[in-house]
Image (cartoon, rainbow, N blue to C red; front, side):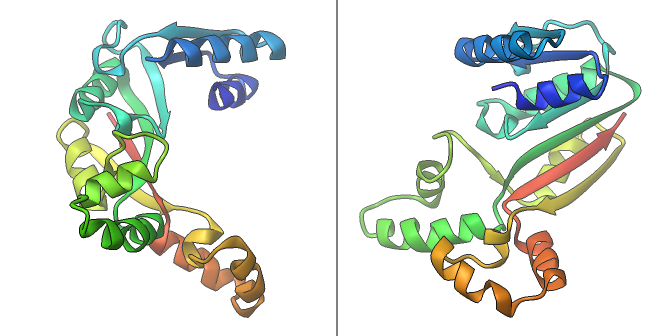
Length: 198
């Protein structure tokens, strides 16, 4: 819906935003117009971007490429459009994070007897049916195919450290230190965030 494009434009970046959805493109254009921001918003497929080689210094993708049918093609395109010395930062869902485990327990164990696969359970519990989940290793392997330098970090929310319903989490939260919660979020967070340099 254009929030990240807005934040980058406000920080002084020259932003070109791409989305496959006409609805999202229109929403991002309207957001930019309402905020008085110059953002070049285009409808297009990230697996076949219509940009010249080495067009950008920086590529940002938060929660996008794991919904695509051809994630590897998108990573190749990201590499192609980055200038030498450029950097990509990309977030995908973490298969080893607390949200995936909670979904496994809630949906898969019960759904198993009805013939549901783990993938189907994860897809049904996320923001898009085709969402893929990655481990640190599989994400690093995908990006290392194209990029020279990569690092993968885990991010998440307090709910990843204390995977309980909100009202119960509020009751037990005082039992845990902030240091403990930060450490557990880095271990159990629902997001993998890769930084890849060209």
